[in-house]
Length: 432
Ligand code: KIV
Ligand code: ZN
Image (tube, rainbow, N blue to C red; front, top):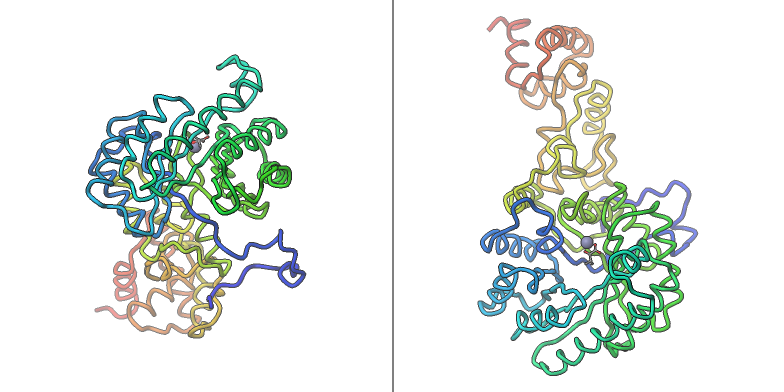
């Protein structure tokens, strides 16, 4: 049971159109330590990587892409550390990325030697611009490249039966690839990997560069899902980037289009404009009444650890997380919030104007909900006096006192604190 109810003004739930309503969270895979890390001005060192890994485990990720060990010695050593120092909890699977190139694949298997479980994630670019301009390869040659390396991965894994292997393939730039071609290459890879319904591989569809409106991306995914030859041997995954600022919407539409797994980063770190923000996605689900299976109940602690690991700030207006997102300065908002708090009953559905989520659910207090500056009105001023000093001002006094406060804030142009507000009230009425 949840104190949130999906916003459903047209009765979608009642009409049970399954493709219009999400009912469960996807499998989450964090790529903070790989895609996120490769986008940092100062990539994480061992100590920051470990801190990030432990945080991701604590948040509840069961799949974590821990690096690109064939491309970086730091990543290689980090993967070795995790395995040799037995740092991977039993319900967590680490994932490593490699290009579809023999030496890199061999090096990745070296990094993974002795892992209890692992996802080997290989990729090659499939978009026409990459085929034509970068690799100068025909379609058939690109398929051949993917298939050859899929077979190699299968053989290397078969030779190491102590590890429980999962294979993952990404047609890089899926978002810019012809649909029939991405279908053909995926079909060929799934066969080469020998995947079956009992032993599914992950097919990860990246919007390496976001190129379209989210509904178009979702239509592509739906088409792919419907036209794959071995759909039941595949876990369909999505890896949205945010170049058009619609990564979250793209992931949500992709889930409606049948995706079972989402790769992304905390607070949307990642290449260029970032990977999809898993915090945003998860808390959207949460406020729709679906528990995401990730724990963001102390969002500020998570934010400060991520800011430390990434050495990047989270924006004060970041959904659910930013410093200012639970704060109203404007008079009419404050008035509505004050009334809704007064009317609120214990255990009721969360129905609060201007606050889509209860700040308490992410470990915030109600302290910052109302702050006073020159935009504020009687509701906010009265709310603060009541909260801090138990004063229940009559309406006419509220109006009068908010005029006094406004003349101060207009003159200074600054916010005033609850303590300053009390001093003004004292000076004006109590003379203490
Ligand atoms: O964005 C992308 O295409 C990637 C792949 C390597 C999965 O990060
Ligand atoms: Zn990416």
